[in-house]
Length: 161
Image (tube, rainbow, N blue to C red; front, side, top):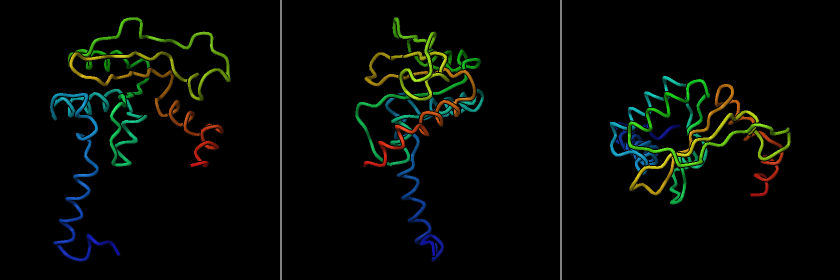
Protein backbone atom coordinates (compact mmCIF):
# COMPACT_ATOMS: atom_id res chain seq x y z
CA UNK A 1 0.00 0.00 0.00
CA UNK A 2 1.25 3.50 -0.79
CA UNK A 3 1.80 5.72 2.24
CA UNK A 4 0.26 8.67 0.38
CA UNK A 5 -3.05 6.80 0.12
CA UNK A 6 -3.48 6.21 3.87
CA UNK A 7 -4.65 9.71 4.80
CA UNK A 8 -4.36 13.39 3.87
CA UNK A 9 -1.45 14.01 6.28
CA UNK A 10 0.72 11.31 4.69
CA UNK A 11 -0.35 12.40 1.22
CA UNK A 12 0.82 15.97 1.90
CA UNK A 13 4.02 14.71 3.51
CA UNK A 14 4.78 12.47 0.52
CA UNK A 15 4.05 15.23 -2.02
CA UNK A 16 6.25 17.68 -0.11
CA UNK A 17 9.11 15.17 -0.10
CA UNK A 18 8.91 14.42 -3.83
CA UNK A 19 8.49 18.10 -4.75
CA UNK A 20 11.64 18.97 -2.82
CA UNK A 21 13.70 16.01 -4.04
CA UNK A 22 12.63 15.81 -7.68
CA UNK A 23 13.05 19.52 -8.25
CA UNK A 24 14.24 20.51 -11.72
CA UNK A 25 15.34 23.94 -10.53
CA UNK A 26 17.75 22.31 -8.08
CA UNK A 27 19.90 20.90 -10.89
CA UNK A 28 19.38 23.74 -13.40
CA UNK A 29 19.95 26.72 -11.07
CA UNK A 30 23.74 26.66 -11.64
CA UNK A 31 23.13 27.40 -15.35
CA UNK A 32 20.19 29.81 -15.33
CA UNK A 33 19.43 33.02 -13.44
CA UNK A 34 15.76 32.48 -12.72
CA UNK A 35 12.88 30.07 -12.82
CA UNK A 36 11.65 32.10 -15.79
CA UNK A 37 14.79 31.09 -17.70
CA UNK A 38 14.20 27.46 -16.76
CA UNK A 39 10.63 27.68 -18.09
CA UNK A 40 11.99 29.18 -21.32
CA UNK A 41 14.48 26.29 -21.51
CA UNK A 42 11.62 23.81 -21.18
CA UNK A 43 9.69 25.62 -23.94
CA UNK A 44 12.75 25.52 -26.21
CA UNK A 45 13.20 21.82 -25.47
CA UNK A 46 9.57 21.14 -26.32
CA UNK A 47 9.85 23.09 -29.58
CA UNK A 48 13.07 21.35 -30.69
CA UNK A 49 12.70 17.91 -29.13
CA UNK A 50 15.89 18.48 -27.12
CA UNK A 51 16.79 16.15 -24.25
CA UNK A 52 19.02 16.72 -21.22
CA UNK A 53 21.34 13.79 -20.60
CA UNK A 54 24.57 13.13 -18.77
CA UNK A 55 25.49 14.12 -15.24
CA UNK A 56 22.75 16.76 -14.87
CA UNK A 57 20.04 14.23 -15.68
CA UNK A 58 21.67 11.74 -13.34
CA UNK A 59 21.71 14.32 -10.53
CA UNK A 60 17.98 14.89 -10.99
CA UNK A 61 17.00 11.23 -10.84
CA UNK A 62 19.57 10.23 -8.20
CA UNK A 63 18.62 13.29 -6.12
CA UNK A 64 22.31 14.09 -5.77
CA UNK A 65 24.65 16.98 -6.57
CA UNK A 66 27.94 16.89 -8.47
CA UNK A 67 29.97 20.07 -8.13
CA UNK A 68 31.84 19.92 -11.42
CA UNK A 69 29.15 18.69 -13.78
CA UNK A 70 28.12 20.33 -17.04
CA UNK A 71 24.78 20.54 -18.82
CA UNK A 72 24.49 18.30 -21.88
CA UNK A 73 21.59 19.24 -24.14
CA UNK A 74 21.07 16.82 -27.04
CA UNK A 75 19.21 18.27 -30.01
CA UNK A 76 18.77 17.23 -33.62
CA UNK A 77 21.25 19.22 -35.73
CA UNK A 78 18.49 20.58 -37.98
CA UNK A 79 17.00 22.30 -34.89
CA UNK A 80 20.25 23.18 -33.11
CA UNK A 81 20.20 26.81 -34.30
CA UNK A 82 17.06 27.40 -32.21
CA UNK A 83 18.76 25.98 -29.11
CA UNK A 84 21.94 27.94 -29.78
CA UNK A 85 20.02 31.20 -30.21
CA UNK A 86 18.13 30.54 -26.98
CA UNK A 87 21.36 30.01 -25.01
CA UNK A 88 23.09 33.04 -26.50
CA UNK A 89 20.03 35.17 -25.67
CA UNK A 90 20.70 34.29 -22.02
CA UNK A 91 24.31 35.47 -22.20
CA UNK A 92 26.08 32.25 -23.15
CA UNK A 93 28.96 32.57 -25.61
CA UNK A 94 30.40 29.89 -27.85
CA UNK A 95 33.82 28.90 -26.56
CA UNK A 96 36.42 29.69 -29.23
CA UNK A 97 37.37 26.59 -31.23
CA UNK A 98 34.84 24.50 -29.29
CA UNK A 99 32.73 23.30 -32.16
CA UNK A 100 33.79 19.73 -32.88
CA UNK A 101 32.60 17.46 -35.66
CA UNK A 102 32.72 13.73 -36.27
CA UNK A 103 33.86 13.90 -39.90
CA UNK A 104 35.98 10.92 -40.87
CA UNK A 105 35.16 8.71 -37.89
CA UNK A 106 34.94 4.99 -38.46
CA UNK A 107 32.85 2.52 -36.45
CA UNK A 108 34.67 1.70 -33.25
CA UNK A 109 36.37 5.09 -32.89
CA UNK A 110 35.75 6.93 -29.63
CA UNK A 111 32.69 6.23 -27.52
CA UNK A 112 29.54 4.37 -28.56
CA UNK A 113 26.91 6.63 -30.02
CA UNK A 114 29.30 9.25 -31.33
CA UNK A 115 28.57 8.36 -34.95
CA UNK A 116 25.07 9.71 -34.29
CA UNK A 117 26.58 13.07 -33.29
CA UNK A 118 27.08 15.74 -35.93
CA UNK A 119 28.90 18.23 -33.70
CA UNK A 120 29.27 19.44 -30.12
CA UNK A 121 29.12 23.15 -29.29
CA UNK A 122 30.49 24.26 -25.91
CA UNK A 123 29.00 27.43 -24.45
CA UNK A 124 30.16 29.39 -21.41
CA UNK A 125 28.66 32.27 -19.49
CA UNK A 126 30.67 34.86 -17.56
CA UNK A 127 30.31 34.31 -13.82
CA UNK A 128 29.18 30.69 -14.17
CA UNK A 129 31.75 27.95 -13.61
CA UNK A 130 29.75 25.22 -15.33
CA UNK A 131 29.40 25.10 -19.09
CA UNK A 132 26.72 23.90 -21.47
CA UNK A 133 27.38 21.44 -24.25
CA UNK A 134 24.95 21.46 -27.13
CA UNK A 135 25.24 17.97 -28.62
CA UNK A 136 23.87 18.14 -32.16
CA UNK A 137 22.70 14.75 -33.40
CA UNK A 138 22.12 13.44 -36.91
CA UNK A 139 18.72 11.98 -35.99
CA UNK A 140 16.46 12.24 -32.95
CA UNK A 141 18.59 12.83 -29.82
CA UNK A 142 17.30 9.73 -28.09
CA UNK A 143 19.01 7.55 -30.74
CA UNK A 144 22.49 8.78 -29.77
CA UNK A 145 21.70 8.61 -26.05
CA UNK A 146 20.29 5.07 -26.19
CA UNK A 147 23.08 3.87 -28.44
CA UNK A 148 25.64 5.12 -25.92
CA UNK A 149 23.87 3.72 -22.86
CA UNK A 150 23.17 0.33 -24.43
CA UNK A 151 26.75 -0.34 -25.55
CA UNK A 152 28.26 -3.65 -24.47
CA UNK A 153 31.24 -1.98 -22.79
CA UNK A 154 29.03 0.36 -20.75
CA UNK A 155 26.66 -2.43 -19.70
CA UNK A 156 29.59 -4.64 -18.70
CA UNK A 157 31.35 -1.89 -16.75
CA UNK A 158 28.16 -0.89 -14.93
CA UNK A 159 27.68 -4.40 -13.62
CA UNK A 160 30.97 -4.12 -11.72
CA UNK A 161 29.53 -1.55 -9.38
